Image 1 (spheres, rainbow over the protein chains, first blue to last red):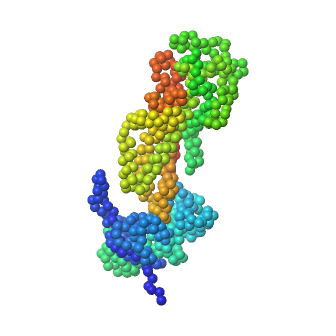
Image 2 (tube, rainbow over the protein chains, first blue to last red):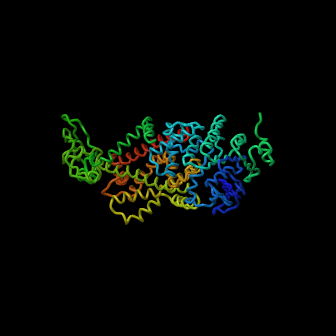
Image 3 (cartoon, helix red, strand yellow):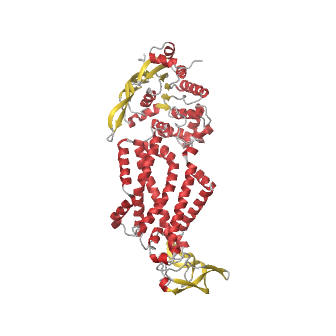
Length: 266
Length: 350
């Protein structure tokens, strides 16, 4: 018999503090506790929603997981291995496994590169053996996967709508064949009609490729729709963690109640 | 991007005009040995301060008037009526090496000695001002391009790295630029020139020395602005995306930051080329730039700081000043046109 499977991601007591410096010598006069003592677990193949208001530290958690900011303390275990303080060169293999989708579809694509070059960059780094023709074939396949056409690959980002750009961002994340994707408010900058399309696309991809998501959002309805488990964050701490139904039907923490009350009702 | 920019420049009247004239200037500078009727140090002591020779159509071909010196005390020349020397095209001349290795023994046009063709008069030793202007343009026009190349490379490297990495490197780099910017430019130039002069003696080396000195002063401003732009681009998600893919910092700078700075760099380059032309002119004017027997526009101007040039109205000796003036204006207008075209607020976010 198999032992109980190790969760894909275990975060224990994660802290991310940013120093506040002042004066000529950049003396440290304090710190911002963006993420303060946060623990959670993400099981393989599931979606964990992370909600909270602006400035609560949700994005910082996402960026710490993918090492865009360095954690101050705590441990992050990926597949049972501690990856918290790995050097960049040691972290390299995880760049292929963990990817991110950004909130702002207008700034997340380099305006001076074609779609092919944007997506192909991931292939060049992690699949250096591929030739140009193979890369073009792969980019075409990825574009097909996110609902775009292969002939789109030689255009520039400004020729696409917000929803299409977000699809391109998803294709770039998928190019390295990741296991885990941090979705950093992927739909909050989009029109409501487009939001549903992108959320459905993410769900289809999860089913097809067996992906695991950390879905960061401030829109509770979206999070409820996509998540198996929900974390509620306030001022750098997780105030409530429960299944999606439990959070929405029976919120325990006063902050969660207030968040739910703040959702406009028709 | 580049061909698009060229197309846009040519669609604007001012831009097309400046670009075409500047290209003509550079072509003339490139072919100076072929176009100039005389070498830079080709003297004729019997024809000092000769006025521009009149060119006329005579017996079916171009010819120059012949002049007689009527008053040697004030260099007064008078045209001799009915006396002409025909202008020949593709005339034989002493062999020289074009670009240093192609032997050529002809010039495009000239007259038979002892008559002389002075399109823009002669100077105090009877050298042809037009020829010297052409040869001098090689120095004055290339110094801007080479200087800009050096400053851009240094500025981009230092500013880009400072903005991208921040921290200690940023502090050290920025204090360095402040140090350079805090010293008055002209004094720094003169001090550097004096300190380094003994290691450079021939004229090509002095040319390079001047470019290096001017670039050494100039890179600080570029580096600071590049740093600021890099700082703002640094926090754009597409840079994070590249980092998340595991892209190295050098590649990120080259592939993601540099192309986004390109339009800015083009504009600043255009607008700072005149600074180099004027800088060379100032150094040569002060006698610490290009030295005889080479020539440059600044050097030619410094050689006419003589009261008699003004008293006796030898206006043709001031043409290098006009050449500097026109070139600087052309580069400034072209820079403005390019800035209008690539202004990021108007263009990139369609």
